[in-house]
Image (cartoon, rainbow, N blue to C red; front, side):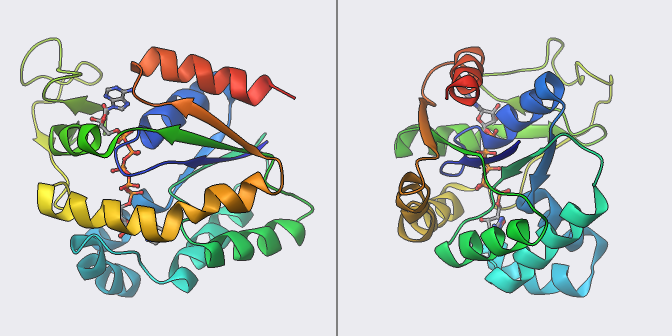
Length: 216
Ligand code: AP5
């Protein structure tokens, strides 16, 4: 199964991808996570990408396509992938089709998580993660059971993404509407798109995605 999770910043792509990994044994490939790792490691790619990400703009296609190609080749014995945050432009979608075709694969399903722009700003600016295990939290929607202590690993350090300020979120949303939303039409023409209501709670969104994946 090759699943593309499509949706604006903060729609819940990462949240749902993690759940799908556990439920369906698929592997999440998040270009956002890969780029943040490159920035943290101070690689040449990280140096190129960091400033662009901080402005809320998209990193050039060739850089992210290269990252995905490497990971597809590195993880051969898996039952499938969840592409989270990739593709994000028509150029990336075309490059992905070529990459998959040459490996005897194709995109099987595209799930679009729909959320209103105003809700997204609140979701993103309230988000934080455990600095140790990466478990995700939110100031309002998902607080740790004991304040200041990670539910999953017990660590007490948390972090916020530098691009999660309101100003940068607005730029990320602009990039989504201008460059990524056209992908809904691209995959609709191939009959691969199912939309789910991302305004519902996390459990309900998961159920809808599950149904979308099982639908013919
Ligand atoms: P990336 O890391 O991909 O960020 P994004 O697309 O902006 O998405 P987010 O990770 O912010 O949100 P999400 O949809 O995963 O939501 P989440 O589950 O965390 O990209 C960052 C940057 O990297 C880009 O701006 C760009 O510069 C660059 N980049 C990455 N990929 C690229 C590419 N392919 N091409 C070019 N550049 C690229 O949820 C958000 C919050 O809401 C959480 O707190 C969560 O707990 C909460 N939440 C989730 N679901 C619900 C719900 N149903 N109800 C209430 N709260 C919810």
